[in-house]
Image (cartoon, rainbow, N blue to C red; front, side):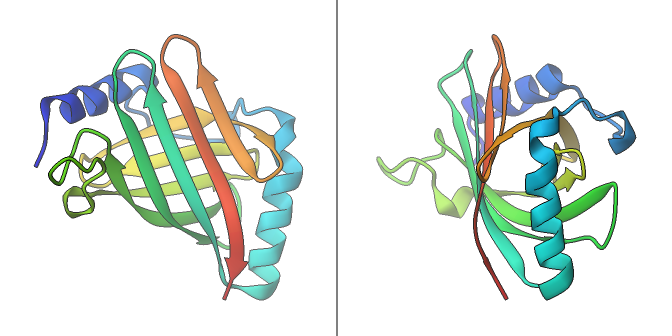
Length: 159
């Protein structure tokens, strides 16, 4: 069930980042992601399998957090070297008093470019966002002042 807060989050996210048509060649992500993306792509291309990931997005202008967990696999080439699938849960969708109602999930399709740019297609809402990321360890992040923070963390690789 959609709440007003979720609707405001999704519409605000679309306005914040813009409904976009993306060209990875125009990426402005910094160079800190190059080795992480190269390592991830090499592992997937040489051995197959998937990486598990978690993604959080929270906005600083509303009390709402988005959480996703899913898998990323190789696309086989540039510019979007990996893509995946995930359910998207919202902190204002509740089952009783429990936040992040798993029975009220949306779905997303994330892509990561060779330069560390994150493109998310929101399947449920039929729009997309693009984030220019920085990387530390196995985490991709973007902090948009006055708007919010995006963090995607890679976890284990497996077949």
